[in-house]
Length: 270
Image (tube, rainbow, N blue to C red; front, side, top):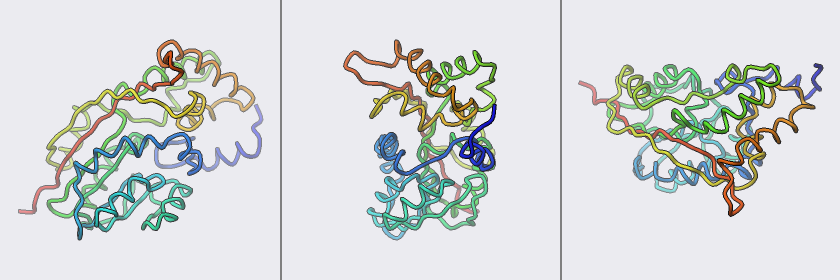
């Protein structure tokens, strides 16, 4: 099947961060994914940024949550792989940079790291954890939340089934890493972190719009593995498959989110 020029360019520019086939546009994100930053607010209480501290926001998106760190008085640096998101963050006056989470370019610069809804898009977790370890000063703290084992399982299975009916292995193009608490704790501890808390949080999440909008925003890697002319039918097929489970009588879509929330610390130097 011959793709159009936009799809050819898209394929040539697939990311190295692990979320291959996934693009982030600030306007689409603000329209369909504002709940991501809103629901990440409890992480700020866990991080408790203070004036005079230097904080890294890893996977900052459009900077909505980053701005709240800055408003607490801390000096915050924001990084994200998506250039369009970084442009939106800079428009808020933030110190924001395009950077691959697998290759963080910091050395003992930060008192704390906050990362919200980003780590599950990075499929080489040990490289990311090593970079976060290097970025923190002695005694620095790491606070994060990410998709966990079972996250959006109903949607994922429906996507995989729809693609299988067309001869495509959906699991092979999945851009997601959803660990168990045991898996991620072991990885953090292997890097040297002291894990102070880690828990699995089932969090059914009301979507701001239609299921199709969620799929187009977060499931682009799956959709772009299919011929362009097939995508509208696939969207409709997936939506109908999940409707009995995820569509409420009140007319709302509720995604089956499961999150992994954790707090860890880099020990003080001996």
